[in-house]
Image (cartoon, rainbow, N blue to C red; front, top):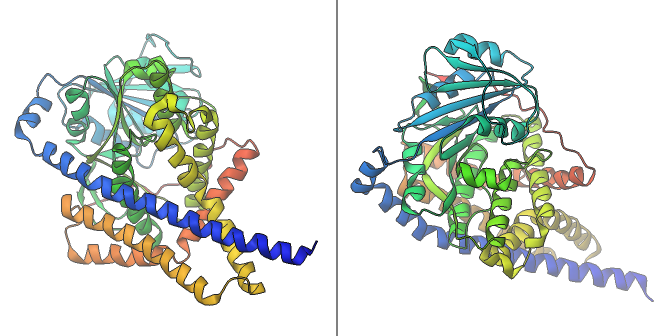
Length: 471
């Protein structure tokens, strides 16, 4: 056997396989973009319906408890908790869980909100790490603070769920700023369709926005490239990614920073799973799986107009930890529920949505990294034509830019969050630069997440924050 000829043949066919994969992935993204447009129109019309607005603002709206785990959040906890306590909603409770923080989070909470200790009496429906104390506030009757041993985010959410007693619960991060009317918008599918079990909202980047009294009062894109490129990523992920998947049968992901759930459905599913770094996605996939197996009609929805603001990583070190952890969590969730892959028992979720997450979201960084290596080797040995390689790169770059630009156009057409033309032009410039180095870094980080999952690593990594910028 001519091993040199064999190697050339393998490399030649591999490069073409990567090319066809590229066509498939970008075709799927284009389909999601097309599907997202009628979803945007539908949600836009519902958000402007005055009769629905009056209904949502009335006592007919079900009570909601915000579940906010806090771990080393002393820099942002006062601002974000103040925002939670002033959200416009008829019947709202807030449960903050100090999950064994090593900084001054608990001391800051006690001082800022005049906490007093009370007997820790509640039903322990889900097992959690030891609860050290339960606090209420002299200033805010709706606020409860749970101080417990460290058990991770999922454990903290389960502790908060034990304390909560309302029909709906909103899981969020303690460093998140929810817009005043976000819950009134988020509750929409629960009032319109009785079988709704979960709904997610939009997450936006608050870096360099002006925050006054725990509210984002002046929106502007971050000045630094790293958080600014994440603005474009988030627009792309939420405005066409998750909206498009809505039309395919329901989302597998509801952001851990802002998601509304039926408390009963979460309890029936067993709560958030400890021992995974992707507890937000894992819970939603498990709910899909259980409800499909029981043949229970249900809805998991994504609503684009409820908005929560969060602080994005500003250094490569912190961002790499975040993206590696996200992909490690994705890998773990897909592996745990692999029985759903292309399984007609789970309907559109099993036949379309779950395979999309495996083939596109999970596999993409591996194929892309191997594709770069195969292309380089092919060019070196003359197997791949330089002109073809240049065209391929131009097509990949161009399609990536087009998808990002369409996301910016959809943002401007429907929501106009960025008030100045120069802000939009700045985001366009960021979209043009995103695929020139930054995208390749995210590929490496995501592949690293798979490798770390295979090694059995479960750590979160340190997420340093500087806090929100006040006016």
